[in-house]
Amino acid sequence: MAERHPALPVHRLRDAVAVRVRYRSLRQVAREVGMSPTGLRKFLDGSEPYSATRLKLEHWYVLERLPDDIPSTDAARVALSTLTRGLPADGADGARATERRLLDVLERAHARATAGHAPSWIRELRHGLQEG
Image (cartoon, rainbow, N blue to C red; front, side, top):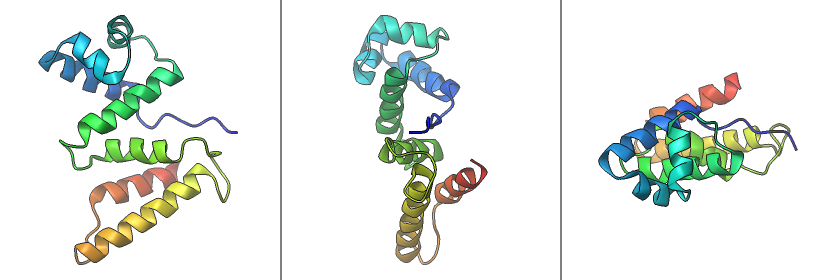
């Protein structure tokens, strides 16, 4: 199976965690993410997360950001990547093709519900898939 690219740049995850830690404690945010306070401190200090930790951070990002940004392009990108995780990157049944099909369904549903106006995050994600 081909290696998947991370859904978000690590600096976006780090920035989101840093903002949350400012308003809560490091210990509380570590508990939310599902990692140790020491591990979260190392991540905030610049260490590169292991793949399992990165998944936890991405899932936390989606759960914590969606209520504020209904949905932000970044949160939608992580959610789409999460839904297609485990699929090979390319091919007819690969992650990218599946992500395109999911976006098609979402775009049609939004267009029907809003008289033809799909949210900008769908166009942005589609554009990113074409570049990738």
